[in-house]
Image (cartoon, rainbow, N blue to C red; front, side, top):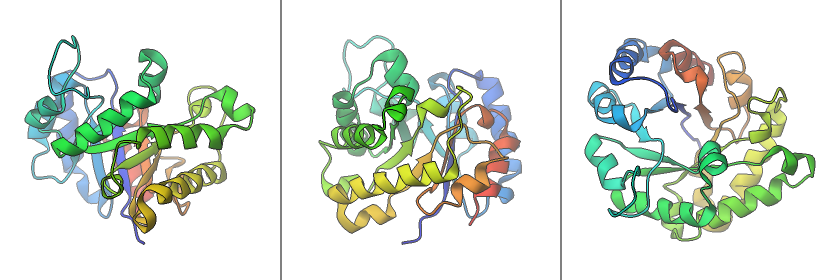
Length: 252
């Protein structure tokens, strides 16, 4: 099954509202360079509404960087699916490696977040990936299997087909170690095999993004792999021209 590539930029805790709108202007001016590739951006919550308004009609997705599983309640500092929808978001990152490592998010929470997003009409993007100790111990597949199965445990088979998965080799992000395209493909192929247990043949239509320090210089080689369907980009997405260059390199 042919899968249309997807490139998403995660700004993390960067950009004011004014900076975010300026970025959107730069992006929309160069969208022709990304023809054939879906784009999305994950701004901080404070800029979500402005970014959604600036990108309205462009076809570019706007995702929250995180979301809480409850509709409302005493959860200081959190944001609900309804709040994301009202701000104009079309999806949400779930379980990003920094959320797991720094804020102790766990798979049971993420399972609840997946179905909460689906119920609200948001596209869930479930992030999974192994730490350095697991890679060195040869436990990559065990970790990916556990995170994926637990994260999708509450979703029905037809719902799983609506999920995007992002693979983050945490051991190769900011450590000086490099994940080769062959390593990326090996992990993505394994993930797709696990997805077949949930969604059957529909797993062939689920996009699996690579999130390991993707840049314009390595995007083409990484996304040329048969099971790598695009990229989740961090620092290289802070300049619109850089994200567009990655998208151009990703075009089939």
